[in-house]
Length: 154
Image 1: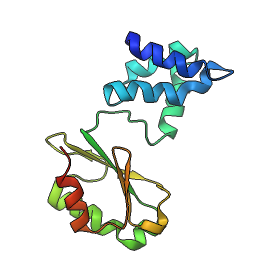
Image 2: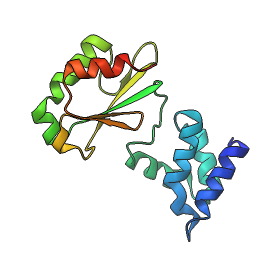
Image 3: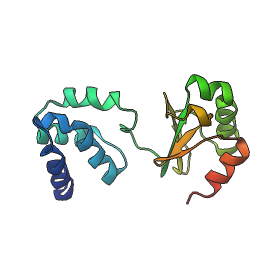
């Protein structure tokens, strides 16, 4: 069930569109901001609030890589796997994250601190390899720079 605050925030977004259904991405982001991810139950509640079917909203949710449909760690790492990042060291970063930090692509660490997800493009080809953690973009990465970033996370 959506909280009163979630409902109110969804209504603010829905009011900005001619058709309530257009607020789908923003409504899902509201739920995710409060809960960390969007469960099946929450998705159904959002669909009802917007007057769409859960199936319609699910198809939208799966198209957006920034909508998490299962629990994630406290920090979400979106590792760019575009051609530029691949050429500039993507595989080295993936291996380092697995061996040093204990997280592989699509997984969350045992302590639920980090979730590592691939991202088709972060728009930082000039700073490849790049990743985004909790909405902050980092580029020109080396394993040393990555370690410093991750060590700074609480």
